[in-house]
Amino acid sequence: MKEKIFNIGLSLLLISLGLVLLGDVIGLYSVGKFFNGWWTIFIMVFAILGIGCKESTLSYGYILGIGIVLLLVMLRKISVNKAFVILFALFVIFVGIYIAYLILWKNKRKKVKNSYSQLYTSILGSIDDKFGNIKYNDGKVIAFLGIVELDLRDVKFNKSNEINLSCVCGSITLIMPSDVDIKLNCKNILGSTESGKIKKGKGNVVVNINSKCVLGSIEIR
Image (cartoon, rainbow, N blue to C red; front, side):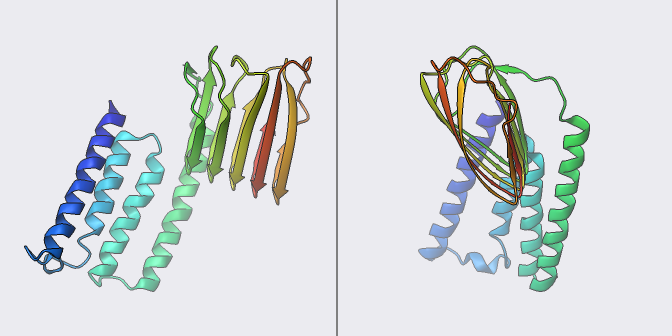
């Protein structure tokens, strides 16, 4: 339900922005006369929608902060230099809050999911999913300042499968079944990829894992 509300709200927001710009272009009004930085209102409304409807509350909270800071710059309440400092300070604060969240609340009970998406992206967020007896489709996992943990032990793999992992300043953990062969191709830049606990199966099912890790960690077990 929240996802539907978010999508409807985003649609209305984009339509409103388009109408405002169209009216300004054809001369119905001059939107710049309302106040400088009117466009930042759309950024803030988008962020509020995300805070109310999405799980990545911190990410949308930071977007809201960006909108407020940009509005203050446009109203000449703060300088551009101060704006950069404020945004960096907010970024550090949000990262600290997120780390505390992971430490205190991450170990909650997983809900078994009956569908598998081909793309999982965590940006300043957390994904912790366990999958039921479902068919696997080749997928991609991206973690940027976020954490992703996928439990794939009960998933039905094809004879040949591929998983692409990209991790920057975050972590990705894959929990694999014990009866599959894992072929790992990893590239690390000041990061680490651990796969010591992999158990090779009988060769009937092969999972090719391509990983790229920068200042982060990837674990396959």
